Length: 122
Image (cartoon, rainbow, N blue to C red; front, side, top):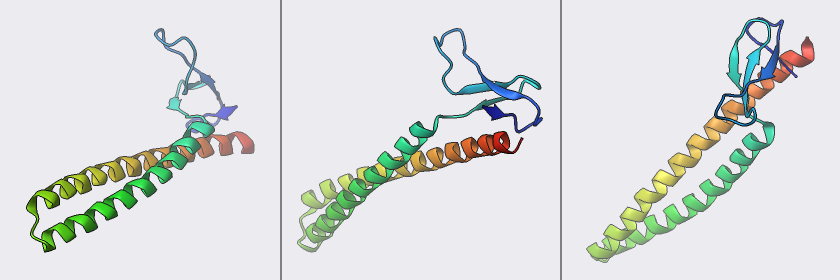
């Protein structure tokens, strides 16, 4: 069970909305009514692991196409360099998306740890 970090008295109970058949990750304090999203541990770990692998692949492809674009510029091949630069730009978007997912998963793990730590000390 999670203990409310706002009042330190109530337990955080799962809450479901009318359009959701079961409670997902929304919790509400039974004492003060404080609501929070507490994501499950395995979902956050899975997001973290897959994002790290995705960043690895994206960086590999980004560096590979960046080197090919530089070679095409040195050989004065504008058509090849523009396609490689487009792929480099796409790789940058992928890296940015994976970094965002890592930050979000890290924040979810911090929130989970905060609620669990309160539950263990109470």
